[in-house]
Length: 312
Image (spheres, rainbow, N blue to C red):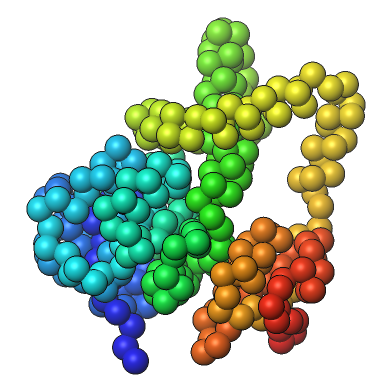
């Protein structure tokens, strides 16, 4: 059975990169952007530019524009709609109310501080983790259609709920943006000598705050509760004796990162257990998916309803 077409709304860095990756993978891709330059750039990469979208429709627009992203477009009433937004609960409330079970929330954990169609990279998703929301009302066939889009782009799919996603990314994405801002602002106040001596550690620690400030504000404000809680945990860590803090942080950052293969049935509980254990889906097969768990994750019997070790 042929894969459904993909329509991408918003052809900037994320949407344009996804469209380019899918074209390279042989998927039929249509797209639209309000910016004529973005449309022209996508067309040059093989994307069919049109307002008529069907199959799996991907919203790759800023968070404040999610609710109106489909206005003026001719979308097949049976299309599955997903998004690439960095916060999931508010988008679920908006789009879930309008689209019902047709909506499947998503968030690829990739991107750079650059933005716009000039930052498009067809390899952006290769090896990235792509969180894909599996709520109680999510239709599994639609979830799988979106998962297959993510896999075709080169990503690995992490099954989550919207609430789990927002709590997790507050710690590993949203707080780092705030810490990068704080580090840059503090260094700026330290004077020109400090900035002149800044090297790799400062550059790495402040890279993400080179992102569009409007994007960062929308992200942290849209996930304010979990971000505040995660930031409080960081502040508690900074109050510890420095030797203990450095040792514990080093242990987390340098822990072994091996992975082992598992097979998981097409069941919501089993898929979510895979995600909660730090695993991801790497391939869709007929009656189950193949995935990987970290070596230091939960044992195989923690993946319920038939999860078994996969091929070596």
